[in-house]
Figure 1 (cartoon, helix red, strand yellow):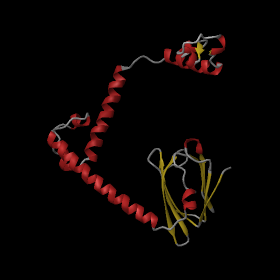
Figure 2 (cartoon, rainbow, N blue to C red):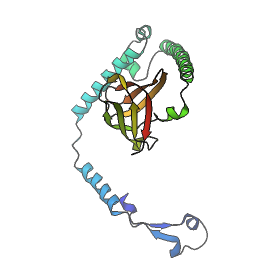
Figure 3 (cartoon, helix red, strand yellow):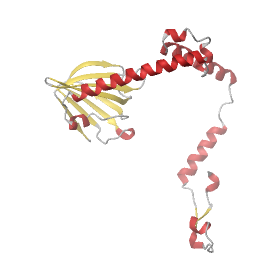
Length: 227
């Protein structure tokens, strides 16, 4: 990229046309100093990187594959696992025709079950009779939690740069915390469900991060604002 600094650029219509190229048709590209400094810094860091550690890489690869072996065995039905001659080979993407047929059948069953659950979920959500505006107040997908305060109100503040909203403060009025699992601050809002209850709402939130924290709160109202 550094070689582009000082390069002469020509208008594309002139470069591929038959007309004579003049000075007005060209510009000299000058890389911004901060961009050049950043690239040079990356190059310098790369040049002093640690030498390739074959022993370490082999160890990490072995640990990764062993985790994959266990994961594959845990995710599949036992009757299919018992038909796999070598789980290590299966993890690399190879299996017998008989096992492949079993996997296709299982995949079809899984798809039917997912469609059933999705239909049930949609019907349940539609029955909640929650205004669209209220649903819109809990749309923080991919926003990072920067603060969580509990007390007379539950207040959550966000860094919204990774999300799809500029609203960075959520307040749950008159809260009752049903479940608070894991360290929420520093994680990102992944998924939510909102239910109507007699005196307000019940909000379920799953956060992305270590151990996938959860929060379930009942509240009288949901308020939002941009600070």
